[in-house]
Image (tube, rainbow, N blue to C red; front, side, top):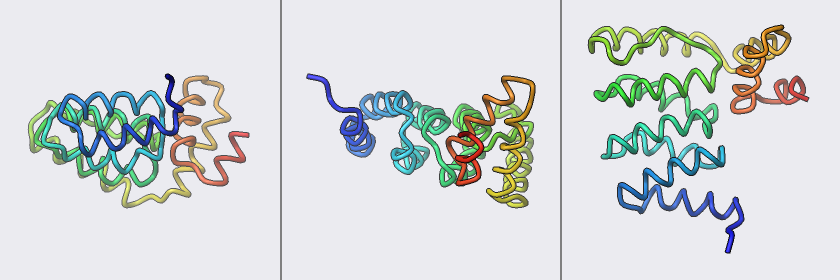
Length: 167
């Protein structure tokens, strides 16, 4: 029998918390398919999972399921000792905010720390209203890819202004 998507998402969130490593990885990956923001906080918790594979998958899944609240734990993950986790976190932050800072998780640890600091500084110096306004402006671009990326970010983190613009 087919499970209703809403219930399946709730079941997957439970697997994130109680399953073994393979179950947690599978649950994280399947949550990405649903793009369910209701799973964002549970996925953010998995950024500290004991399994490297779960941490990487959780960061990537937050690119599809994340919300405004996901950005701070992802910023913290930029300084993970594991470059794969850090790089996945950078991808997710870019997707959620529509902003890109140079970031190479596979460089020296000190350079990665500097790059992560620039990301944190950017985030500290801005606010969601400013981010949203910039993304709404991008919806007017003649470049379809710019418009698509802005719409995706607004879909994750936008408020009333974003909803109006996307309509």
